[in-house]
Length: 259
Image (tube, rainbow, N blue to C red; front, side, top):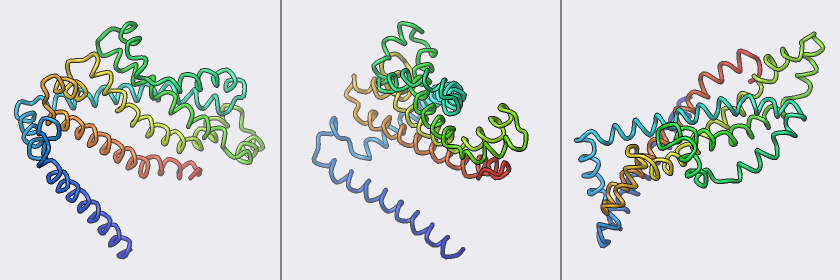
């Protein structure tokens, strides 16, 4: 136990050293560059302090995070039942497969203009675009997990007299949870990619808008600030979701005897 904890602290230390080394390299590399093209860490820090002081940074972060969460949860709520059905029914899979593999190859960014025409420039178009982008990632991983449930488990449930609905809810769905978790994790990263485009093209708030607006005034320091905000938000969101997977989902699966 002590050795494992020591290795963990060593890896954390290496990560910290790596970050510091990256900042030093950035500072040295930006010294001889045009500050309007490649600002120093000091310039980005000043831009951060400016945005924090006037309150714009926190409000833009809150707006972007809300859009991401709403679109991600909506897309997942649609994709999970469809994925379970596609993974357990060959008929449903045959019906959905052409649409899934066609639309998942179409970049969500190509649909920005259509969503603006259909749903307006308000919040609805942004949330729906994020949901659309997340649906196909979640539905594919969920369907693969559902179709990969051991046939022995299903046959055993049937031998004990379980009906089709009982087998679905008590055997297949719990066994599909790891696949759902993975799909939602991938969908979360997709949501952050799409929110940038939706905010840049049709918004007056959010981190994506901050980056796009800074381009107009050659505020490269604010562009770097927006990039770092998205990186930090994506990193934190991913770690929180992983923590939930290690605690809540793991306990659920152990309680159901599927983990």
